[in-house]
Length: 256
Image (cartoon, rainbow, N blue to C red; front, side, top):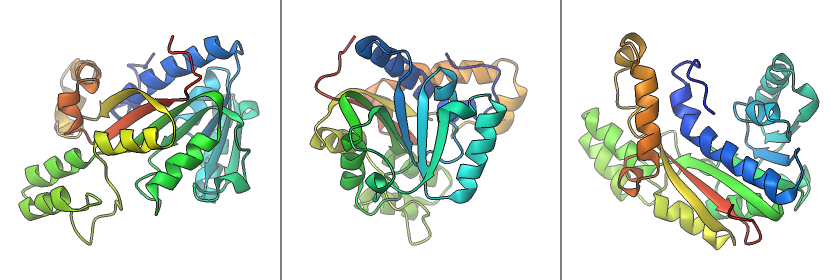
């Protein structure tokens, strides 16, 4: 369950966490093992990894940043799960230089595809790390959310540029190399041999609502969280979400 007491940052992770936790629970039942082996590719300081470890699973985080891995170590220690979290320096391109092929029950690939030269290769590598029964949690920047944000900020030319650009970029100063539609992400997942278990829009409203409203209006944060969860599965809102989350499952995975 998501924790309503968490700060406003929970708006960025609540929907993904609910879907991921449910998928891990299904994996526990399918494998008969309470402790799963989970790979968090590009997991940084462990925002998700530590939560997964709190469920009792073993998590390996691969990230190119030594600073992020140091923060991960500190976060895991503070959460009392240091024995279940391992940080390894590496990247998506050279993933199997540092981790085992086919060694994981679940792979998290969150905020990685935007920055790799070849997103299809990134997904294929993530899938190759899965065991025969495995699940992929894929989170990437959504095209529509960026277009909407540019337009609402009055940057109409940039909004149009992002809409027409093959990589969804709004200009030379855009810090994000790739953005995706839901159709593009599902095609990448299916092209790597997985079936798509679910697609969710993430931060459909959260980035559009003034922060002062959420922070000062009684009950606003919880109400916005519930609205995000209600809209997340509806395809109509995928096209305006800041991020898109796709759950991919191997053909052998029980659909429970």
